Image (tube, rainbow, N blue to C red):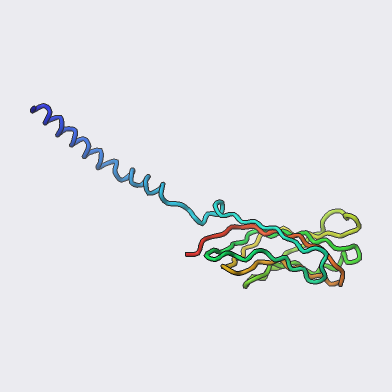
Length: 162
């Protein structure tokens, strides 16, 4: 009986020593498993593509409104503008707009001439935010009265608003 009592006391002492040195690292591992980065770009990626086809000036490519409780962060805008040959040199500008955003995007003449048309493109890194209910859009203006086509893409991520 006395041996069992000493064995039990020794076991309890050993557990107390182990608990003293290993309890905090173990709790840190439990906390790390619970915490998440809910606003991570990789978890909330956003990309949308839209166009306006054969329209007169201006072309307003609108995207879906930002859902309630969210904020959209746009980091990249791309657009391809196709003009008839007669209006090929009349492109004025391409802009990212909506809410309080107003950013001009630089244009580059696309290589080649496709079917008698002239194309311009932009692929620009931007930083713009849109809150719930706001609508991002890519607007294109030309100096001539001819019709043209725009294909636009925006990408970034959404975050939850508290």
